[in-house]
Image 1 (cartoon, each protein chain N blue to C red):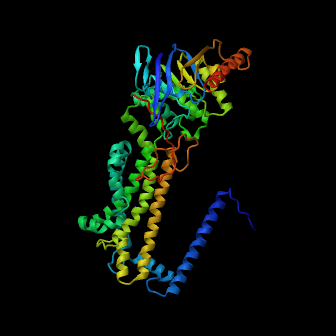
Image 2: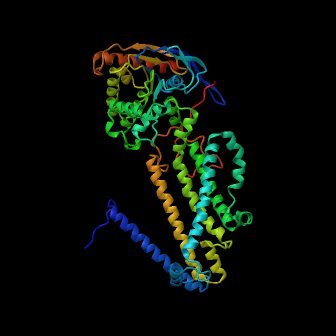
Length: 304
Length: 250
């Protein structure tokens, strides 16, 4: 019994992608196993050891501190979430202001240009010193998420469809009403894009910050602690947990962002059919287009 | 409504371009006036000045005895690329202006539905914009302008983005709406055929800087027969005028 693969059948496509992923994972494990055999070093444990350590971690928790895995996870996620919310609370209004007011944008551009390229984790020792272990890690996450959010929001504001602004003016809208009823909604897909990028970076930050041995736990702490004890399979088990949680967070962000963009009828990744002028006033240095499409329209200005 | 001595100068770093010069026009209540002209002349610029989206360098636009200097809902505008809010449904798009004006909720609902029905979209009232075809989108655009009961409706090549067949259907529908109301409409188009089918008067512009070259009256009753001899004759004459414009420039 043989059925031919049909590209247009949704189940066929699904089965195909599952099969490819499964084979890919198996090949990955084989390579891992091979590397551990060849290297013959305690720092690269075999997959089997690692997975038994992982199951033990899930079942019995951390053998050294006696804390269950859930404590570590919730500790990491709490810091992650508060860092994210803080970044959102500041980046959203700031992004709208910077996007709207050219002078303020030009004024703050040097600060942002200087601060943005600094790896968030470079702040970790300072933040931990300033705010303590828990808040310190939160602020590292904040820095990691803040810049992608801010740049995307500013970019979104600059990409607002001028003709929508014109339309709302002819319908009698004031500047404030244009701001709330046109500008904010049309920035949402870019905001979602910023959240997507930011969460990925934020997740890397939280683990890295926790590696500075956060006493009250967190998965990063678990990994760092296990390495100091030389318990490498356990450390790798922790890394797997980090990977899975990271996948879940970014997957969730991706899903939500897709739904929101669809609901708003403006998928930023699919270009509009009719865009007139090229984005002459497009991305300025600090505001690199992480969202790709441009649908601006520029009008010349008559002398008043 | 009257437009008086309109002059628009665009300024770039290198040069000044006079887009529109001494353009004056009186439009009677209930009249549909088309503006046609060589491509690249200031048709859209004139419309944007009337809408208040662009400040003319000289001249003024008055409705009744009120001078219009900024955009307002007394001058509704229909845009070539629809300019609908993609995050709103059809009905929410039509309600936008009434929300701005603070019209009571029940009245918003009633008026929105009345105009959505008038353009034949009652089945799509709760659809999102991206689910609609081009012709349907522009009908939303028209309903959104009409619902505000503007003194004048400005249409900037409203059917320019549509295919030829949809275009004809839309022209017929707009014609019906005109017959059933006493709307004042200024209609910019590059299609002479469209202008003759819809308007009471056709204003032919010169090349840049735009001013009025000729005004042609179209006195026939509606709906008009595009194949009738007087229709084709007049179309030919207007096309000749436009041709002369191009030659004069070269």
